[in-house]
Length: 496
Image (cartoon, one colour):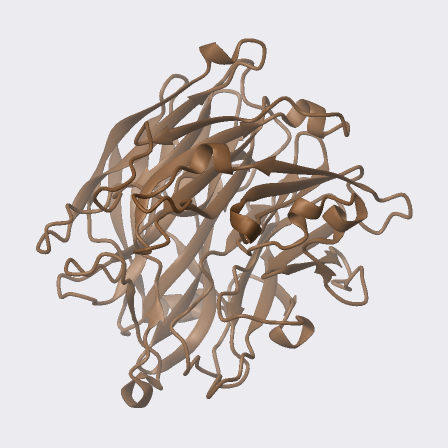
């Protein structure tokens, strides 16, 4: 494993901000949503003809060339399920994700329900075309019952299937859930499921989903689960994984919950083998991968559920700090099959100084290996010369091995803004930082930020990175909710 600490000097970074052309335009904002929430969950994907963005709980498609919205207003997240009369999916509970299946050129919209009447479902809609402006657009809609899998606490309450993340693989769509105790708000374990992609792509009845939990069986009580929030590998490009290749997922390994420990030196790799013919042969196992020592972003050993430490200029008066969501790895886990090797990329927010709740930066890992992947190289993107926090990353790589991570920035003297860094993985180059949006306003009435963002690569040219995250054009104060989102793209000159 190679490891390197990357210090982005402010003077050099300022020059780099102008060195690479970045296009950006407005995405969905709170005024376009009927009942906007502080918890935005902005994410999206680029397809062959459009970029599609999700926020809680709606989505919009934008033409890749003109950036014009496809629909006059964002579409309800329940649109496809109401059209299919799947009443189980009429009330979605947020945490929606947009995925473009690059191996089939189809769109996927997926989310969990709110648990009306004590029942939870995972709702997935697959388009019949890659063109969301087509007059023949239709959706194959599915609802998967989760109650048989999520378990109950000692009071008999169902665990909440929180923070679902979806990845495309050749043999299935894979989704992971955090099992959250409704009484305490603590993660008690995780659930990972395989969905029958083959039949879902054709509108046929899928085989029952196959699920595994950890711990197994799911306990009715227990300690806080420290390796939660699994990220499934998601295929980038049109080259599929080798035939028979298992799906892999990754998760953080948080420090021991002993009220004093603050560092960790490993992450977790999960191997999901699915057998649709004989489900008894399916399996779900994990190994620990050693990495350079880190402290999760905004980690509080006395309360591991709190990861709020990112300041804004208004923090001195409001005392509100942004949640870095530093207790987990962040989507996506981008996978590319280069033929001669396979590469997996994932990132998260870590502290870059020893002082508690100090400056945060972006840690990334590249995994390689034809068997069980291992950490091939890693690095930390951290500022120098100015006291900025970097947080909420998402990472991907283009067809020639250029990696790019997008993220938010904020600080005592810097309103929350948007930046990205790129570098070449095979040549181990030093990242260059790009300015996407300079912040002008703060979130003054809530600590909620994003929960996640997304970086994807254009499946047509294999080069253009597309990124979406949130920001504020005007201070959010009092009871107002007025967030904005920004969609951007850029291409590295070495990718042709």
